[in-house]
Image 1: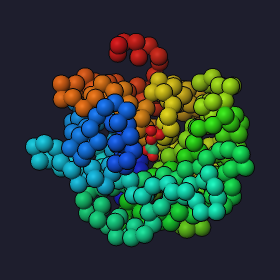
Image 2: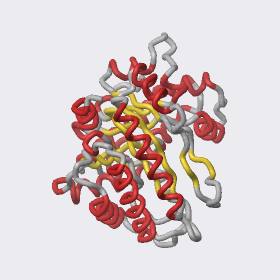
Image 3: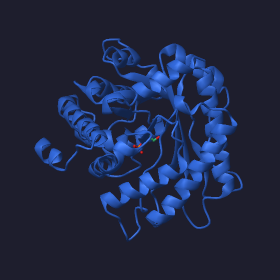
Image 4: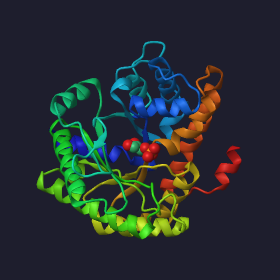
Length: 342
Ligand code: 13P
């Protein structure tokens, strides 16, 4: 493992206020999103959609890295250019999702454990050979009656750390993603408390398993009220709660925090990230960036609908969201950016 290279990659992923594009939806997740829009749920449609994304003009002005899925890293553009090459040619660093999904936990009803450690060393070596320079693993924590349990939090933290250590052994920067879900009626304070506990547990495990914090990126949820909580805090209140929580739990050696969007609207995700950077950017030890899937892609997917005739319009929607989020990394986003685009 070359630690300096991993540190350089981690820094490059958030350089110039750019962020990450998560386009690593598993086939079942991608198919579910296609089904809602009447798009055929077949490999050819998934490939065409991913080609639309990687060929979006100007994407690399705002996006530093793209997270691929096992199917996608093996796919090519129609002209035969592998997606990995298409991305690196424009200066976007390719990454790969390596977990195999969150499964029901035995003995802990309502909770999930992320799988994918089997043969992970071998899979990482193959992905590195294919050109991936970073990886992603997502753990899922659900809030509800009596949950999350310590059992769930600790099992997921241990798996995240084992994954991260294997990534660094293979020379890949691990993106460590513990996601506290938005689903539910919990308050923002409850989300804050659970997020802090999860992050402290994750960093404890990373320390025990000797993961080098300078060569990783944290991908957490923002601290938000549950989707059905009657009290929905303002953008600034969310920004304050999120940064306060992260300051308590994330060591300064971590170079960057790149948020997931988690089902927030595209506009809210940009506005909240922007508020964090407006209020705190100059004072924080880590960069605050984005690693969104839905909040970057959803408007484009809804325009594309599987029809070639809509590719250019969909790409416009994607680059618009990418620009909004880069502006948010600088603290320069404003809702007026949305109006000028429409
Ligand atoms: P969302 O931004 O849609 O939450 O997806 C981020 C991601 O990569 C989930 O693993």
